Image 1 (cartoon, rainbow, N blue to C red):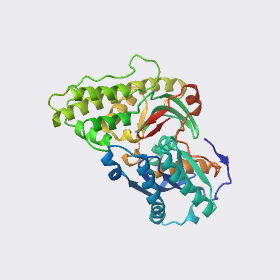
Image 2: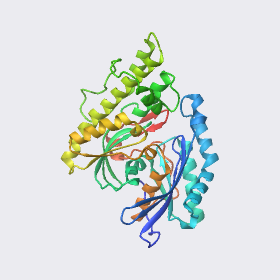
Image 3: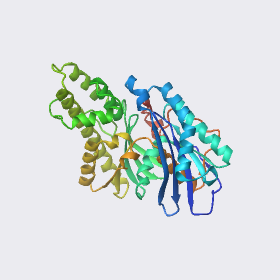
Image 4: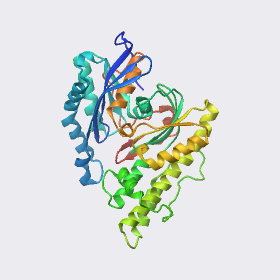
Length: 373
């Protein structure tokens, strides 16, 4: 991560940071205050959803997303400041997602943050979107390093050892589609609507998860990587062969898919837990990202963590999906130790959290929700 040393913003024992998120289809602005004892205060948290704009297309359209971000970002910043009862002069820094993501949206957030930093003479912090998710559980309660992170979203499925701030080691990643993308595709195949993840989870509650025999990818492969392309294709084949595509058939296929996805995540995470326990004192399994809102997946991972002697932590549901608070917190944590970003920092459509692992074993591709890194 490209950071530079900067002068500590104040002597009050806390830092207050505005965070902007615009990497996909959520425009978000939040203000977080990080105290020197680690306590986190969320002073405001504003999100504008673009679901209505993208719903007719069954997925995120990058051009529409970028225009929507540009239309609302300045208004959202003002709303966040007003809700926190603060002015720009009360901030110690401004942070923005700088990648990975849809480049048009990322640029909107970054340029807004840079303009505010210049105008108010305060530090700018370019934050890796994945680091925001990695630190998001710390928004709700104290969480000490190190911990094992399962990051699951529309664009990412990764297992990472979070050793310290800025020190991350990747155990495994998706070699094709992310699990969230597979949820969205499953919903689209059966016409369940957008966004797909919540739609699949909802209808799966009344389904028979044993009706359809779906694959569990990479069962015989060593390591902690993931694959969901084959599972996604199997769902499509089964749906095409359904004689009576009624609501019950949809529920059964959704339940069967959700069960296969959850078992795949649990199996690979179990390998990572064993590896993590050999490298660190057992601590916590943390799940973050939009798919972490799925209750079946949460329950399975909680049971898995218990079986391996780990604690289990998941952010509150509102911090699982993309949000500005996680970006503000990541910015505040870096600023608190005297780090900021240069104003010429470029937006990055692909930006792996563990860059060394990406060079040794590339696992990046393109998805409808943006680059997977």
